[in-house]
Image 1 (cartoon, helix red, strand yellow):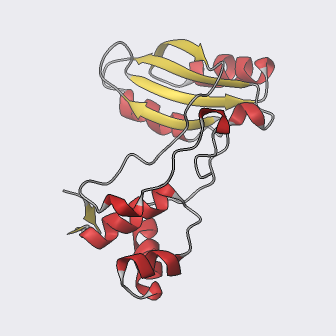
Image 2: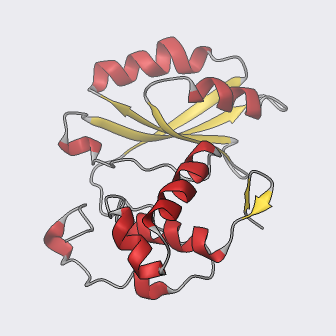
Length: 177
């Protein structure tokens, strides 16, 4: 069960999250109207969820279109028992945008975004490979981004808040139309 500061998220919290996943710029007043609650309640709930690390509202850009030429997933094998510390150290690198502990071939996966090949080489050879516990890495360069979305849902919510016409495939990453 999802919790907010030790108490469960209620359906209103889930509906607010779902609405913001569909459009993070949606005015609180519009969400409030659709949920039939005061805008101040939406504002308070969003602030509380942000403070508790449940919700983060950010602008997502395709790194390949804004001057970052090297976008890669890095599979990392680590010394047994060191995965959490390796994740903590990777989290501190400005080039990492996504760090996860996994089961399978790799113990850790990290998404890294670099300006160019020299930047990527420096990151790998001078910093990432020197993290205590890293045994080996495999890099997977992203050639094209076909989907970049973070609206996976929040359990049972009224999906009418999310109903919107689907963008044409040629619309690119901006899913809002």
